[in-house]
Each structure stands twice: as structure tokens, then as C-alpha cells.
Length: 591
Image (tube, rainbow, N blue to C red; front, side, top):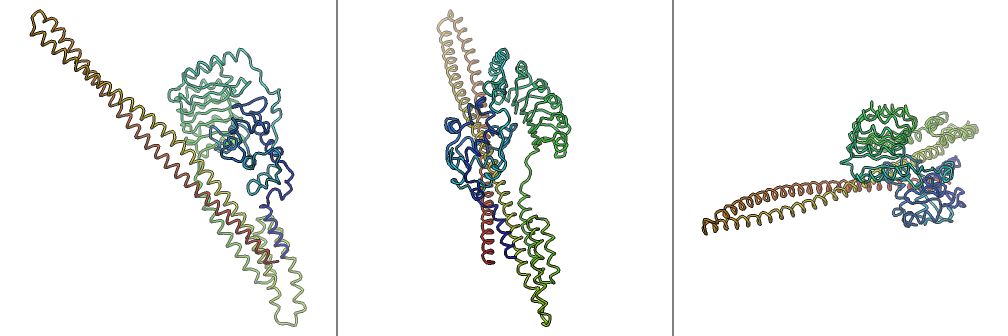
């Protein structure tokens, strides 16, 4: 029985062994894991045929030299652009790979981070780097499921021929679009595919502006109309973009009527409708878009029921309806952690009755495959226990014989309880880390809002200063005009007293004085208007500063939440270590 208990603890502890202990020592981290991951998920757009952002990831030299040496900075995970961008939230515009491309798994990201943290070496073996914890588990998973690059990645067969006439038309259209302040450019080198963004002119960009894109409608693959003034009617122009794969419509006036136009986009893979007026009925119009993989409907009138109905119509689609309350999950974990303790205590009290009842703990063991096997073997030691009473028949005290097996049974139950506690503590640690990650994302977003609010406040201050300068200038002009008026009036009086012949000249001077007075009045009016504008700008600046302060407070609160989540994760990890030590101590005591 003691041997069975030791084996149970041994199997449980295998999950915490480093990767090197399981035979992965001889693998080279870069060539056996890192480069295959990049080949599978990144090289299609950052390889010999395409270099989006002028970045290549198909060789060690290119990886280390990319982005002027900032793509990978050995030993600095947070400062390296590659590891920074792959860890951004999935809906961030800078995340890599983009949401409509094959995504890196959690384990693949962990391998890339470990490689950078360990020095980004090209020849280092896994055994020499001694990975532990999450890195060791990630290496094990990736080695067991090696990523495969898509067929034809980097081959000349995929290279698209560019029609010179189309290229010239595209260049002319790009010029006209850029004159309006919008952006239209090639997605990558040597491709006719285009991406459009109205980010810089969103507040003035409307339905009529979309007409400029008609000559290149079949070449536009990515379109960003977020926060523009585009309405349902404007989406009629988008309906002609048959090759469109990615469309941003967040925070626009689009409603269910506009989605009718999107039915004509068979290649659409990504659609963001955050903050629009769409409903359950509206998104059902998209049911025919079988290539649609991502749909964002935060802050809309779409319900979970409507999202599920669409998901049933389009296999594999991810309909994101927004953030849900995460606070309830830790409470459930705490409750579950308490219940197994009672459950483990109950079987421990049962060995006292007759040996026939010892098989009862096998019922809860059926819920876990591994403990169940151990439970099936428990009746075996009962056989020698039955033999012991035979020589003791003359004796009147056979009770001690069944009492002895109760001690090993309690160790087995304790082993089950420890295994269950280890599993739940590990789940609690993972949940805490997830909460910490969410809090960090919230903190980063709040920081961006604060920075934007501070920028608006600065611009408002500049406008206020300019208005004040205009007001001062107008006052100065008013003063000069009044002086001219006084001088003209004085000249008129002198002319009247000098002679009758000068009367006409005096009249002219009086007229001039009147005009000067009128000019002075206008100047004063302009000064007052300028002052009102200055006051308005100062008020706007004050409001922007208040918004910045609120955003900064939100960022601080989010950072506190992240710190608290990290603390919970740390305590959960500490609990795991204490449980492992306790298990080791019990094994030592049994031996």
C-alpha cells in the first residue's frame, strides 16, 4: 500500500519536472522550436517574397537585425518589438499576427519569450538553458505538436503579377485619397492588394468620400472606417469591394439596414461593429458569409442568444459580445476548494467499520481516471487481512486485525486529497494569472486614454492662447481707431473755427471720424468675440484636463488591480510549493 501511495505522488510530481528531465535536452531551441513557429505563423508575410513593414523573420540574422535592431533585443523580452507585439490584446490594431491570420498559441508565445529572455542564441540547446515552470511546459507542448508552415509559403508560385494599367490607376487613386487626408497604400511589396484608413480625417469623412475608392474597389482588402461619419447608405460603395477581408465599422452610425450591403462580401473574414446600433436581426443577415471568422459586437443591441444563433449558422466563427464579469470565478474556485477538503475527510472516517465497507471510497475515485486505478487495487491487501483472524479464532479479540488496514487506506485517501488540492491550486494560479493579464490590458488602455486626453488638453490650451492674442490685437486696433477718431474730431473743430471755407473739409473730417468710430466699434466687437472664443477654449482645456485626470486615475486603479491579481497568483504558486513539500514530507514519513 505504501508503494502505491508513493507511485501516486510520483505521477503527480511529474507535471512539475523541467522539460530537460523528459528527454528534450538535445534539442536546439532556435532551430527546433523558434524558427518552425515563425515559419508557420509569420514568414508568409515577413519572408523572402513579402516583407510587411520591411521586416523579415525567415533567418536568425534577419530576426536579430529587424526594425533597426529593436525587433529582438537578447535578454530583454519587454523591450523587443517581436515579443511585445505578439502579447498585445487580440483586438489591438498593432497585435501580430493580425486577427484574420493564423494565431500563435499560448505555448508558442511562451517559447518565443523564453528564447529572447535566454539570450536569443542560435545554437543553444534546451538542456543548457534549463527552462522551468511555464517555459518548460510550453516547450513540451510545442515539441509534441510541431507547427507546420502552410504549403507554398515563400514560393514564387504565390507571387501575384501586377497589371501595369491597374498599378497606374491605383497610384492616381492613392494621390486623390491622400489629398483628402485619408490613407490608401499597398498591404505589402509586390502585391496589388490595398489597405485603406480614414483614421486621420474620421470626423469629416462621410459617404460621399467613399466614391473615390471605386476605381480600385476590387483591390481593397483591408478597410478602416472606425469613428467616421459613414452611414448605411455609404456601405453601398463598400459592397463593390468583393475581395475585402477585413472591415472596421466601430463607433459609426451603421445599423441593421447597412448590414444588408455587407451580404455581398464573400471573402470577409473580420468585421468590427463595436458601438453601432446593430441588433440580433441585423447580424443574422451575415449568415451567408461562410468565411467570416471574427465578429465584434460590443456595446451594441446584440444579445448572447443572437450571437449563438449566428455561430450555429457559420461554423468556426468567434462572435465577441464583450467583457463579462470575471469576479464570480475566483469565488467559485474558493468554494470548490473548500468542498474537496470535506470530501477527503469523509472517506478518512470510514475505515473503522468492517472491511467489507472499505470499497466505498472507490465511488468518488471514478471521477478521476488515475486515482480510480489505485482504488481498484485497494481490496488486494484485504486478503492477507482475512487470513490473520484464522489463527486468532481462540482469541476473543479479532477487532484489531481489520483496524490495521485503515492506516494505509487513510494514506491513499490523503494522496487523493493532496492530488486534488494540487490540481485546484494550480487552476487557481492560472485563473489569477489570467485576471492579472486582463488587469494589465485595462491599465494599458487607460494609459492610452490618459495620453490622448492630455494631448487634447494641450491643443485646447494652444487655442486659448491664440484666441487671447487675437483679443489683445483687436483691443490694440480699437485703441488706435479711437485715437484716429479723436484726432479727426479735433481737426474738424479747428477747421470750423478757422474759416467758413474750410467747412467742407471739416465735414469730411467729421465723416472720417464717424467711419473711424464705426471701425472702432467693429474692432471692439471682434475683441469681444475673440475673448468669448478664448473663454470657450479655456473651458474645453479644463474639461480635457479633468478627463485626463480621470483616465490617469482609472489607469492607476487598473494597475492596482493587476498588482493584486499578481499577488494572488504568487500566493497560489506558494501554496503549490507548500503542498509539494508536504507531499514529499509524507512520502519520507511513510518510507
